[in-house]
Image (cartoon, rainbow, N blue to C red):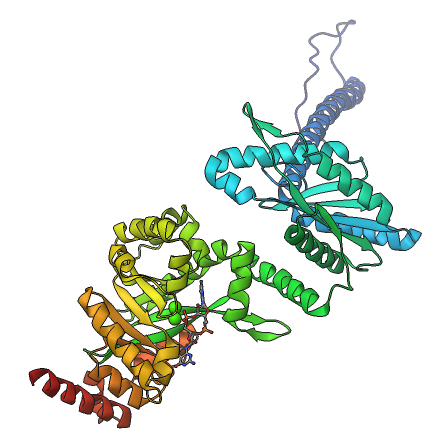
Length: 534
Ligand code: C2E
Ligand code: CA
Ligand code: CA
């Protein structure tokens, strides 16, 4: 049955000289058969051996690849859960460790401490020394902390200048000792590149199960305690639920605000600005909106001051600027030539890096700076006139227009205002909304408009709530109006609809027949023209 040729047996002459007969052939072919089986076996063994060696090298290669994969995977895992700067566990890993430790503590009925650490005045250090130095200082601080902790404790960096430590089996006393050690760790200045930096930290301590029975409750309590300690400059504080409730409530709101900013959850609303000369919408003010998951809408007058007090405003200002610009670009694309106004806070006027950051955002989004207006309240400017002049001048040199917000409430001197490179005054809504009833207010508004025009500044009246006020403003030659009469601040989508159907577009109204408000507007405009010609 073999079909392959393996070899042959050749016989030439028999020993006895006779012919090969059938019997000889039988013997020979039996012999050939046996030889071929032997040869085939040998060949098979060889193949088997080769295959075995092959399989072995294959297995080794596989193992090698596998090892590499495992290493890469480990590296990736490490990267995913470690902070790239300090190599300490990051927020994700800290949360995970906290989770595991809480489970362990629950099982063994043991306490556990979570310490939240925030460096004091790190921002200033960072601003004066630059980010590279600031980064190295953070690394130094991290290793100082690490050195006073035990193997079982987990130290991590949550981001920025925030660290956290999970201390298993620690009760009040033990936690206080650890917090004291962490403080002491910074007592000698930290060295970076031959320079020595004195830096202190504020810490908040939460104990399981007293201050929270879940990781998120503990994180929140420690965060709140950290704020108390920051405010009182006392090094560290334990979470104290008996803090008067309004205070605790505020701290809780602050905690939520921080998370909302970190997750970029705050939104922007747009309120249109009506140009009284052209009778059309020429811009909008971007206003911050925070929809709290439990409390609902929190008013900006509540959360903006919180941001200012805690320095969160810095990140936030850039967030809302970016959002405002992104939406404004969409409106431009739809054919609406709008200017966008963004509010700066008192803090912004001390932030020497702000102009650069703004330039970056403008560059990244290819947004023409001529469409941007920055509003700064009069009182913010007057808090620190020298620095304000510096920052405002830099912004103005970048081609950005500036507007003095809430004008009339901040006691600015005229001579100072003249030195400021601003283009606009926004008359505070407290004067505008009462000017129909209050003669003094009407006088203030009128003289502010005149004064502004004399200084070569535009005027915007805010808080215009009825058409009588609008009429007076037209008569007073005010340049722009903003207020509920024209529209309340609207979410970006609604603002787009507003632009589409706006009754304030005179051209639009000529074709559709107009409405009472526009008629009133045209009436007054005519009156103004006749007054001017008088
Ligand atoms: P603001 O800059 O003076 O903004 C105008 C405020 O007046 C807005 O209140 C707006 O909703 C309200 N308003 C507009 N028209 C009328 C009206 O006809 N009548 C009345 N009674 N009010 C009117 P909002 O949005 O509650 O903001 C309050 C303040 O919060 C703002 O005052 C501003 O100082 C601050 N703010 C809001 N968003 C931001 C922001 O993104 N950054 C900073 N730094 N501050 C902001
Ligand atoms: Ca404003
Ligand atoms: Ca204002």
